Length: 323
Image (cartoon, rainbow, N blue to C red; front, side, top):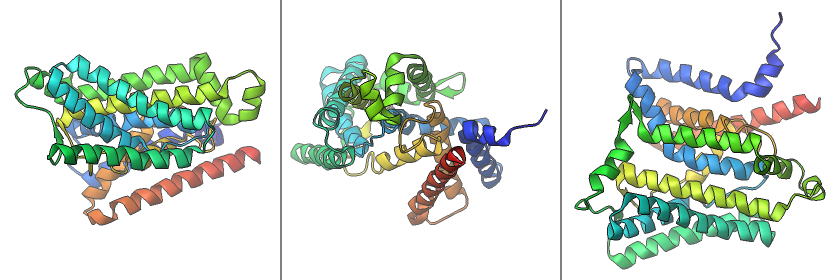
């Protein structure tokens, strides 16, 4: 029985890319390839990956969100302020998700209802959200948002962010569970089918009776909720936010994780599950760069080249389909 390599690449390219990067990771890290090292990849992928899952849905509709890094730090800072007052983990989680949804709703209304270009809208809110977080920090006379270590629930929060279950990081397990749930939503629900239809052909989706305006708003709401959840995980893991540097370039890294995962930037094509592989691949790339001793200032240039390569592979795949 012959193997259809073209079919394998077309449908599972994100796994092939992941395996290739993983082999490079093994070679460059030498003896530092223990199980602990592997689980660290999952640990360091969880927060960015949660944001990337939301970005994946937005890109599937044919839109983009450049504000996720800024909304991440704004939501994180506000959540810490509230958490320090209420001293309740569950309340902190709910506040983070709700605040994230507020940011997503603002973007969603401007893009989905007022039909403004998502690139311009989210570029504007990227500047607005981060400047607000920095202004609030300056008004408080502090340099960063930090959880009060004297809180009764502090140790439980820190254990959530840094704990393990069967040697796997808890926040990594949470990330995988979210990915499984969103994979089901994208492939087996009406909402998921509407997202793909909107990204494939907005005009045809509208003629088919899909409310494309509300679908866009829902997608931005979902992404905002995931940004809020990621901010909560960051608080649990590190217990602080720096409004100047936290979440910096997260919008670009999330897009890179989505693209490396094989989701088309033109919308309507790709698998949500692939974002897990894309995010972990991106994390391993970072560790490979560190392992080979490359100058840290060149780190993002290498990531940029890899992102260009991923987009190039998408173009080749698209041309092979049309051909």
